[in-house]
Image 1 (cartoon, protein in one colour):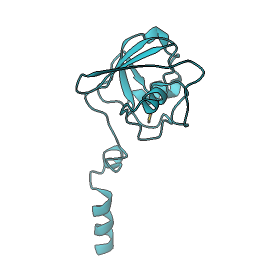
Image 2 (cartoon, rainbow, N blue to C red; image 1 turned 30 degrees about the horizontal axis):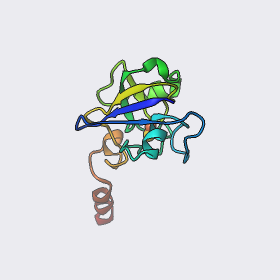
Image 3 (cartoon, rainbow, N blue to C red; image 1 turned 90 degrees about the vertical axis):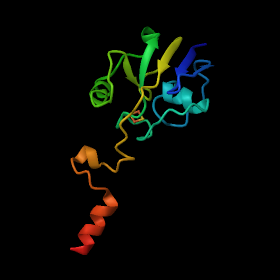
Image 4 (cartoon, rainbow, N blue to C red; image 1 turned 60 degrees about the horizontal axis):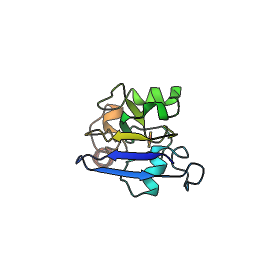
Length: 138
Ligand code: FES
């Protein structure tokens, strides 16, 4: 029964356990990933893209147990390259599947292009609402 410890941004630790093969799964991320474990235990792991490897809000830094995680796929590695505060121990919480005991820390910040309206990602810092008003007014 893997034991998963999350170190939250305020440095408090939350440790939970789950039985492999019987963790409920609601379709967010991969089954038995950090995101799956977090959602089932009320741990506030952001997941702006719903766990489809299309953002970096579920970024975690693995402090112990990297060997107990699934191998990183190319799409996860490509996405992680855009994460804030990337480390050699970084993983995406929705893609890393847990096979044994692990300790994972939330980074201080994440990039959330969804909340930011895509402005930074598109190179246009003007919020979407202001842009629409400007277009209507012209
Ligand atoms: Fe978006 Fe993991 S939730 S990449």
